[in-house]
Length: 438
Image (cartoon, helix red, strand yellow):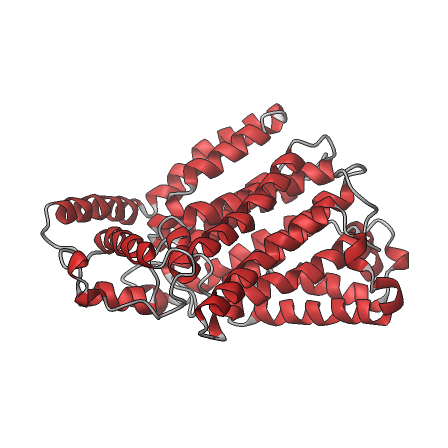
């Protein structure tokens, strides 16, 4: 039974060693409870890293020249996953002030490169595993929300888990929902129960996202819909069938949280009007505008290396910012970030931080876009899922920090590693370059 499961995930399952099977099991299970159990994803990431390192350590003579065998996309992925770590190291070196905490998240992203190499060698089909795991992950979150109403009450009626706030939860359930929707088209001849199961993940994810009241998540909706419509347009029969079904179900999903959705959108408009009329600035939307204005001014004072985390000057003492400075704004900049990922990287590490952020997103975005257009089913499906994921992270980052939590960094590293590994190992001619790593 177990061998049959591995045979669906890896072309030559009979050649798998115990360490390979262990890494695959850890990777498959990683998304299952990542939004439901604190520490789950980080524990599985480091366990998979440990076993992947042990694999290469046992083959040191063979693998000591691994870096020399990396092909074009391997090197690009290494640059992508190492960029945040390098930006922080380089700018701290130039400032002469060292902090260990900022390296935590970037190290998790960098560590995922070892897992990427291992998965690429195994030619692991992560999309097949996702089609079963992701909907179940969303159902588990749904169960936690329904059976723990005190969590919702604590956040004023907005959905959250005991360790994830409504803002972050709304983002991740939305992107997982669209990944479930894209998975409907993965199988050539899917069974009706499997299709309904994957669609249930889509509907549940939307329901949870609307219930979270996360406006930063909803900002990604147009992009996610566009990606889905563009890359599933060739599968017209299935596409129109499930689009028609969604037209019936989605209004029900939306009406369950219509008051919250409309109230949050209306509140944002009202807060912006108050801000520009110079009435009340310390609102959710108003603070975001002030964060960007203050961060831009501070960055201009230290454009190359930034300030590091929590090391910005006291804005209450800066005359140029007196018209927007409040104690809430100053506390937020020092302790919570500026609620904009590009600007936060500028403030933390200057120009090098912004370049690292762009490299971190653009390299996988280009790979996933090229893969999504492939005629190879295994490549195109992983490419579409990758586009959904990276695009979501970009749009979420326009109104919040997307890598300020340990587990969000772990998710990014693992998602890019898993999906890129399938894009590059499933395609007979994935890129111009050298031989693949073995």
